Image (cartoon, rainbow, N blue to C red; front, side):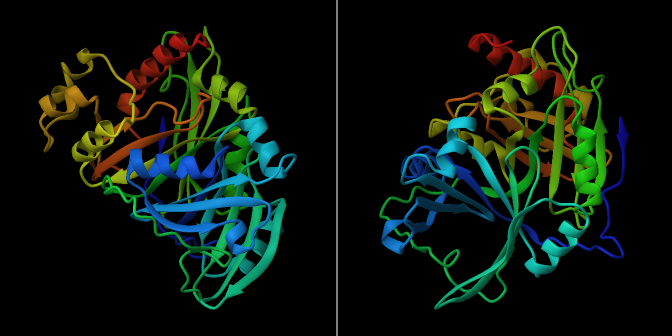
Length: 373
């Protein structure tokens, strides 16, 4: 494994990013999906767009927890671009929106370096000011939208109205998007690593090969790309040769190509968060109880009691900077594609390399139950 120090901002960071602005998921039923993310994950209602706001082709609900903002969008008519996306991929992430100070400059810089145009810089406005957005294509049918909102005070974007239902379950302690993982096809990882490096100015943060991420049956390879200030991190996975079908191959089959595999969201207290999510019906991958037998020897002293982590299935790993705690949900859609990672960092800046074997064996057990291993 090759590991690099977390990158400081470049002297000439041509694409400065303030963070993740929102993630837009195309889903079969946006209203039901919004209810699910409220009920199960504790997201709060923020905004709505649809027929009542003058939008004729789609309905969107915006929910938020901490700095994590999800836009859940469904088509209002058949034979639409949104509907075709859902037909091909099922529910999944269409847009990874990135918050910038200058969406026009971000567009010009990335297109000049080879990005494929999705949306020219477009200014939209209402009584609360204006927003400028632009967009480029990335892997599969996934889009990066650059959002400039310095002169906007509205609830989300022009065209949206506040959504303030009576039903507001308390949140689950989720804070921000830690990273987002993309699955790409065979031998495509290096291509997309080069895309993020050459087109968007990202640097490679860490690399894992099939010796790091493998079990008796399956394997994959991964490289983590980070922007200049480290606020946006994109691990990119591709399949590797194994005896049976890997989780990446299964994803590609069911999603119909490359796409976002999982969204890692941070918390300051993973034990309380997981307890809350479990009580609300969120299902997590489980690891064998033996995983915890020598955990103290492997990771050293931590603040949490292993007896507390064990029944919840929370994993732990350490690097030179500290340790982290993490757990992974089962897929949140009908297809075995998109899932969430809950992560708490106690100094560690890595991605849980010591947990790979236990994690992927857990995924293999789920694949076996689905008959897709």
